[in-house]
Image (cartoon, rainbow, N blue to C red; front, side, top):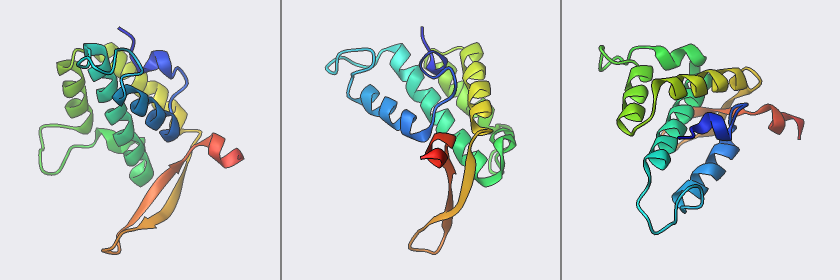
Length: 136
């Protein structure tokens, strides 16, 4: 079974992940659109979710925040929660950890843009700027 490390051996930008997820949702990645998702497709979706959370953690406090213990659930960290979901969908810890390490390296080439959006309640949000976006 191919994980995201196969499709993104150097990490995945937000744009790349969105395009990949759109193809996945349309059934253009691995199976016919009229079939139910395969185990591989469900695993890819779980990995994409994990990478999105890793980006969010990076934007608000660094990659180490991905491992912090959730305040409302002291016995589960982000890592354990995402890993459990991934394995329940048929993935392996080896693939999960491999993609996590690839993405952590990818994020070292990115920067954080602060206060890129303010919602109706006045909360501001950060975003990740991929190095290819900074060059453009």
